[in-house]
Picture (tube, rainbow, N blue to C red):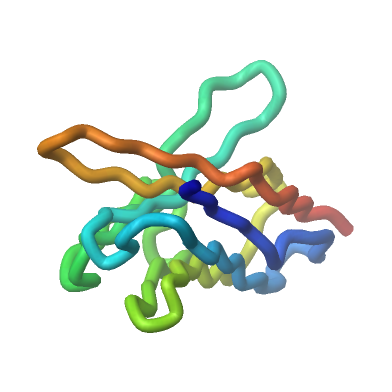
Length: 118
């Protein structure tokens, strides 16, 4: 069955960097747009960054533009989120998402915790 497995989260000081990875299996990865979302307790999950199935198109939440970069490797079935200049407000559980249309299909990973603190 379809599976998304995130890794790379952890504790980092403000101003530091982390790279999240999400490995996909059980579906045709190259046919799906991919995205990263994050959620903190008591708040709705929010979109952080998204990338088209080909990798040509990307978009970002205003709060992370210029600091985060989403990329993908359709050979390794992996999507990445490079995070730099991290701030305490970036602290959240980060989730990987795969989605496609016609038919509409969506998968979620289990999440990885990112904590930015001194």
